[in-house]
Image (cartoon, rainbow, N blue to C red):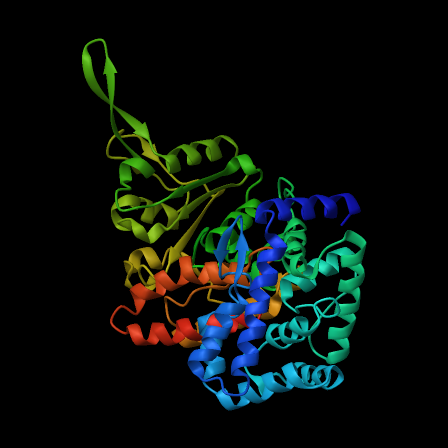
Length: 485
């Protein structure tokens, strides 16, 4: 990041927090020191949670807040730490009272062996050292490390005491360069990280190859080859089916870019309960004229695409039907079930009474959410006319995606995905997919928002008769996310 950009980010963060930015944090940090001195070695579960609340205390624009390190040090993770108060008191006492070299050695032991202080993550041990000497030590949170990495070009991690000391030394140098106080560093470097989030994806060329489809979907090229062969050597229609968040629409759209001769030859529609044969094939529509209201036959979206394809026999056209199982498929498709199987043969359409067929250069791709309805309950006559392409929740897809994003927190993304998948059940038709976590520059705060506003409400519907299971999963997800704060 250029010096000019860094200066601009620093100014923006200071304006965001207001003139009491540093003084509010100084006061809040002193409250933590006082609490530690008063309760050191004798903290029970309740006091451990209270400590977390104090650590999160700060101020913004004159208002007291408790989200400095959210989701770190929140109730879920501090409650987990409070489940073993003996270990907590022992480790915190050593980090807070031992001579600094011994405290650094303790931090190194914890970083090298995380189960020895389970759920403390990298932030709690480093925060205690920071409180002892803010001018020397930094708070080791992922966003801060990633932000500093953008500034220095180095890579930082929390797997050893030596790695932590390297991070602290570079942090001090950076702070001195830009005249940043210790209390500002975590907020400013988090903003630096966000300012360096990857920009929008580059535009794809008009047509894409099999390799580009595989790369764009983060799947094996052999898998795409199999889909293409199934669609070009047999039935020219297929349905991608799986739980929410498995990338069904994205895969269908990218595969369409490979199958179609031009992006202009791709049509997309989404089915819903009110979608009808008249919308898709043809129907009567009212028209106002001089003599009053009259009705005329209008072709539907699929019929119009077929007419275009018939006029260009050397080119390929693709219809994408998103959420196809939300409509009454047998009613919407009508005689299309016959025509899809017997390409080139004609039937008489009921409204226009004209002869109609589906040209061989038209592909039909559908997506189906198995959380709404299983593929197995669809009409057999319909199912046997579509290739069924399953897209299950897949950790391998997520891992390939994170490998291309050095700033993404791969361990956080894959860890939370696997926790939820395994608890719901990998084979469950409602198991949330991997694409929920394929978010640029994923950090703990973003992960918590995804859980709070997308996945938890969705699973609440699934587990409405078993709320205790969701409560347990909620606590474990928040604990895991907070460990990466």
